[in-house]
Each structure stands twice: as C-alpha cells, then as structure tokens.
Image (cartoon, rainbow, N blue to C red; front, side, top):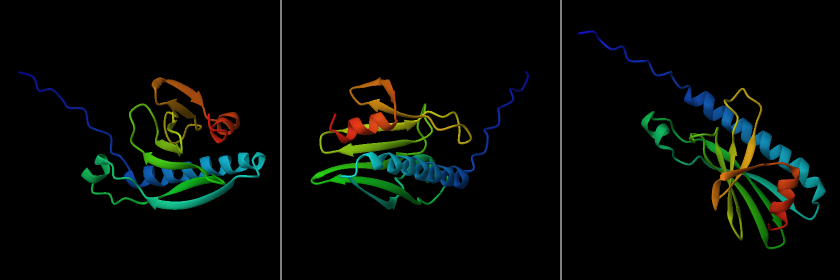
Length: 145
C-alpha cells in the first residue's frame, strides 16, 4: 500500500498580511480624500478602531490591531468606511460602507498584496454585481444613491 503525501499548507505571515492590509486601507482612504476635494461641503475624518476578530487570527493567536476608519460628514449625513475583514473568500479584504440608508460592501479583488488594487462595490441585493469603486461611484454614494 502506497502512502499518500499530504501537500504542505503554505505558511501565512499574519503580521505582514495585516500590516499590508492597513497600508492598503490608508492608500484607499487617501485616494477618497483626494476625490473629496470635489465635494468641499463634506468633512472627512480618519480615526482608528480595533480590528474585527476573525476566526483565522484567533486560531493563530494573533491579537487584533487597530485599523483606520474613514468618516465623511455633511450636515446630518454620514458615510463611514469601516474595515470588516481581511480574510474573505474571493477577495483581498472587505470594507463596509455605511450610510443612513444602507450598507454597501467594498472588496479588493486584487489577486494578492503585490497586485494593483481592484476595489469593487458589491450590491447587497445581488452579490453577483460588482461595480468599480472610483470617483464617480463615490459621488453617487455621497448623493444618497
């Protein structure tokens, strides 16, 4: 009887992935803040919150870190970009975009940390629909669409 060799699981450098994730979030928020120049009546604020607990991190005994949160405010209207998860099937991280009326899902569809960012909005009512997140998409979000 021959022995079946098990494929070795690649080691995950959790700390590097989390550090890269935080860097990608700062890049995303920096780009959004640049786009906000077209919306001078909105105020943007960058804060931090503890990283959401993810099962994979708990199993690896990795303590949550602080991740950036971007809040956009105009009068009583608030749009907030909150990191939800780094380990997401089919994506390289997820950010929830919460407004008064609804929550959108923003995912980075880049193959890995080295690839160019590919932020896409997922429509919650039909998760098969992905739309590029760009300046025009942000303007639609701010207009309450």
